[in-house]
Image 1 (cartoon, helix red, strand yellow):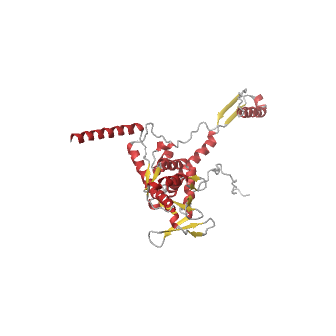
Image 2: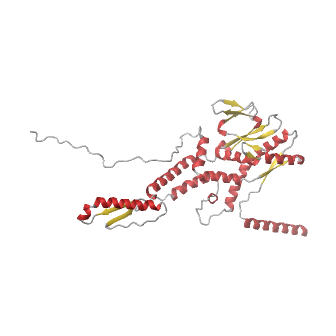
Image 3: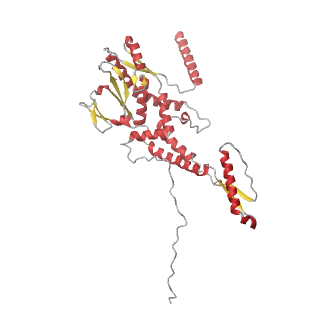
Amino acid sequence: MKFFKKKSVPETSPEIVTTQRNSTFNMKFPDIIEPVEKELYDRIRNVVPVVDAGIMKIIRLTGGFRVICSDENLQPELDYFLENVPVGLGGKSVNVFVDNFLDSILTYGSAVGEIVPDETGKSIAGLWNGDISRVRISAGNDPFSRKYTVINYDGKEKTVTHPERIIYTELTGKRPILRGVPALAGILMRIYECIGQNFDRAGNVRYAVTYRPSNENDYTYARERAVQIAREWSDAMKSSSYGQVKDFVSVGDVDIKVIGAENQLFDTNVPVRQLLEQIISKLSIPPFLLGLNWSSTERMSSQQADILTSELEYYRRLLTPVICQVAEAFIYSTGNSAMCRVEWDNINLQDESELAVARLHNAQAMEIEKRLENMD
């Protein structure tokens, strides 16, 4: 007999077992965004509404315009063309073309369009906003000419035979205003994903109904009473979904608690606000214009109005040559020769009361100047 026989230790299973979380949000940003920049920025505008709202707000704030022709006799014909020119499959007027053009500039950093001639090639049939991700630009025969290559859906390349019909514009450095936003948007979406998961767990109220037998007789029928309590409680909960309110009445020691009522959800206001501040800084728009009232007394100051006005003026400078190119192309198609210029509407970002005060001061200054001239 072996007195010092080694005892066999029974295998034990771990007491704490981790389970994988099920994630319903599937948005993975690639490490290299250059090949799929267009798809990436489109997804950002789809999943982060404040980005899409900011871009659309900039387009609307850019304002309207009117094209003035140097030949007054051609002005009515030019106005009619700009108001009724077909754009794409469903648009009409040069304003629609310019809005889509600016939308592409803001989102992708550049935009491309085409002046489409009719079957005869002598007049303009319409305007077309192109897909910038399928257009490649290279130098032509001289440093100031461009060569456009279009990549078809089958991957084949085709050189544009009439580059003079192509309209192309890009931001400074071809950097879209959304450059740098994908990383912030990814963090923001993960925060919202966690909020959704927490509400799925704790937001949907669930109850723990506990029955405690008080004596031996109760222990005898504990199982039957527990099944009856569960059946009646389930019936009361289901009735509420049909608009019926039922009270739950029981005899004995029955305890009803809300599962997870002692826990609190994390406060995400601070990290979400920090991320939104970084994203909105790329759009150069005051937060309250997007419905984010972070201050009870927040309003547009004169400094903010001047900064936003300078941003809008920059976008207008990019669009002015585009509009003139379309207008002059129409004039040349009619067999005439004239120059065009663009008159933009005034940017009104201040309160009407402040504008009234400014007009009053200007009128008073003009009156004083006239008095001084008369005295001389």
